[in-house]
Length: 112
Image (cartoon, rainbow, N blue to C red; front, side, top):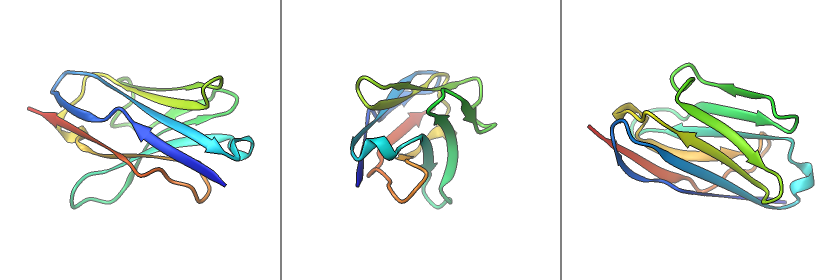
């Protein structure tokens, strides 16, 4: 079984930056993909970014050029660097292993 724990959320002004982390534990040998999703109040959960074990990355159009996903295999951690934040980025951010495991989420709030 895999456990995923997000951290790094907070309150930031528009234009600012945050760095989210997703720490994996348990049966991490089974993980070859980590995805970040977000869910804003009253909206459906939406995909944000993906990183595959070979380092391949992909981004949603809304965040491309502003967010960067990366992995630190020595720490079993995937990070999401978020720059140029906008109020519309406000959401609960989750990491997901592409299977059945999700973290509990970390709140990001961007003030205008």
